[in-house]
Image (cartoon, rainbow, N blue to C red; front, side, top):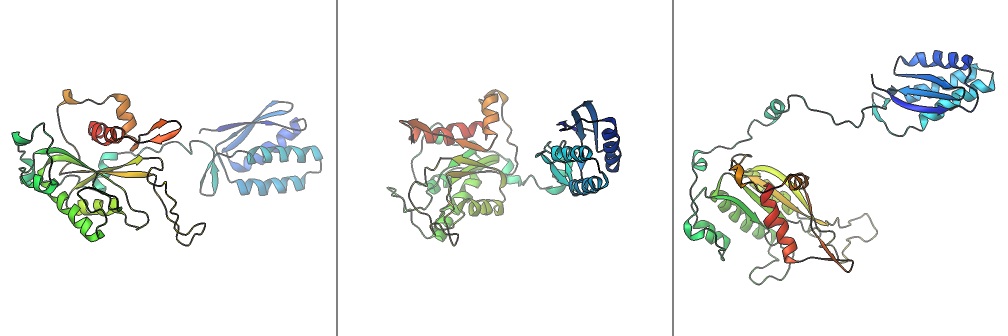
Amino acid sequence: MNYKEVLLKTRTAFTPSNQKMMEAFFDRFDNHIYFERRGEHEVCLFINNLDWHAFKSEAIKLKAQRAEPREILIVDDFVEALSKIGSYSINNRKRVYVDFNKERKVKNRKEKALRRNPNTKVVNDTDIIENRLPLAYENKIICGDSLQVLEKLPPNCVDLMITSPPYNFGLAYEANEDDKKWGDYFNQLFEILRATKRVLKYGGRMIINVQPLFSDYIPTHHILSKYLLDLGMLWKGEIMWEKNNYNCKYTAWGSWKSPSSPYLKYTWEFIEVFCKGDLKHPGKAENIDISAEEFKKMGGCQMVYRTREKNERIWTPGNVSRGIGCEMPKII
């Protein structure tokens, strides 16, 4: 059994009679707590777990039975030393002082994952057969309506789709109405996502960067995720893109200084990651371009990108595109 060690300095001499008294007292708590005398005024406590309320109750009874003030003082020293231990967990009404913050390992992880969710693949024969991207589209930037361009591509020819659609916040775009009715907005996105799924290869990924509009109470990321799940896509994960209050600078608080209906504003955006057919996407090892440090950093599901100039947060197009367009494909 593992124990937490606590060094106790007694205010009065810890005599052999005191030691005998405390040993008899500690015997009531099995072998979960014991002590060793280290010196005239020094004791080392060893504790695994303890019913703290029972311990205090028994200590009060013990003090009531003792007439010698120094014995009462010794009991108080033990109680005070244990009361000062602030790190523990609770299990069956007992304070657990060791291994309470140790990561719990799951045994037979793969078997249990399969039992929870046996359908980690969505296999359609027509999705497995890959097609080559037409040469007219290779290594080129194609400008046009995304839906019209997607319709020209054959199925199962694209490895990765990354998009950051307009958020429907009412911003001024040159060629897009950014204040559509939410039903129209989602219907348009759904149509594009359906077309995107068609052209993705088996195992191909979708990366969608969105942000809910807190003042409209529309959970855009949840609505899109639910649609893609219903469409048969597999959820890979969600990444938080911390923008450090970039979208919350203006003073919009809802019910100011009142809990009646305050706005809960995000300083981050969401990046939803989905897969077509299989969570695993095989490829050639020689094409991997992510370093060990980048892998560990990006695997934490949080991205923070900002530059500082004269103690102010400055966002540049290069700063933004580097995160979504360059670094995300490395790990996804």
